[in-house]
Length: 295
Ligand code: SAH
Image 1 (tube, rainbow, N blue to C red):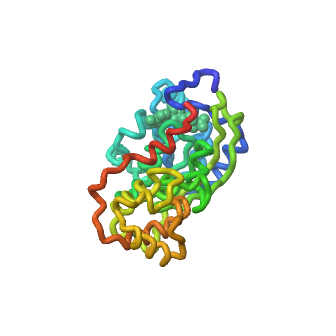
Image 2: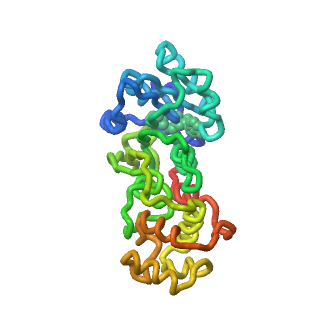
Image 3: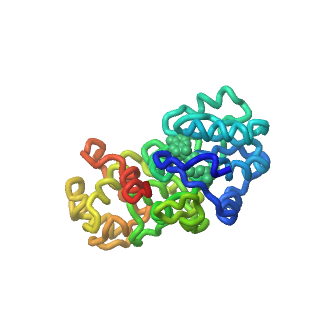
C-alpha cells in the first residue's frame, strides 16, 4: 500500500510503520464506543484503520488529493468514516461538519501530524491563553517531533521549559506517552519523535486578564538566559518584581524558565498595569516549533 504513493516532502509525509508505535497511540487515546474522533493527516490510513473499529466515528482531514482517493477506496464503505479533503488550518471544521450530524463535535483527536505545522495545529486545537478553544477536546493524542514533545512536557527549571511550555501547559496537561525513533517511519524523518497526550485543564486561580499573561510570557522569554527582571524591566518596577517573586518563594535573580505556570499566572494577576499595547514578538509557538523542524 505504501509503495503506491511516494511521500511528498512539502506535506510532511512520513508513513508510520511501527506496530508498537501505532498501539501506543491508540492505547493512549483510550477510545470508547461513543467517541467521535478527529484525525489530521491520515496519509495512507495506517492509523485510521485501527481507529475505525474502536470509535463511534472518525473524521479525517487530508490535504493530499491523491491520498484522499486511496483513502476513499480503502474506507469508503465504512459508515463511521468521513473524509474531508483540505488544509486543516484553513477549512472550517464546525461549518463543514454541520452537514454530517454523526460526525459533529469530535471529542478526541488522534493523529500523526505533519511536523512543519505543529505550532499552528496546537493553536487550532487548544486555542491560545487569550482565546482558549471554547469547546475543548477531551483528549488529544499526537505523534510529534521529539524536541517539541520535550517542551510540552518540560518541568519548570529545566532547559526545555520555554514560552511554548507555559502557553500549552496553561491550557492542557501534557503527558509523555512514548518515544518513537526515526526508523519507525518510511521515509525516516531527520528527527526522532514522541507520542504526547494533552488533556484540557483549568488553572486555579485562572488568569484574570489572559491577554496580559500572554504578553508577560512573551516578554519574559524574549531573551533567553537573561534574568526575568531584565526581560521585564520595561513593564515592571524592579522592587515591585522582587517583592512579587519573594511572595512566591522565588529569588530576584530567577530566569523565565524557573517559573511554573502557576507562578506566571500569579505574577500576571498581581500586575495592575495594562500591558496589552506592548510591542512584543508575535507567535512564539510558531517560532519554537518551527526552529528545528525536520523539513
Ligand atoms: N497518519 C499517517 C501520515 C502522517 S504524515 C501515518 O501515520 O502514516 C502527515 C500527513 O498529514 C500526510 O498524509 C500529509 O499529506 C498530511 N498533511 C500535511 N499537511 C496537512 C494539512 N495542512 N492539512 C491536512 N493534512 C495535512
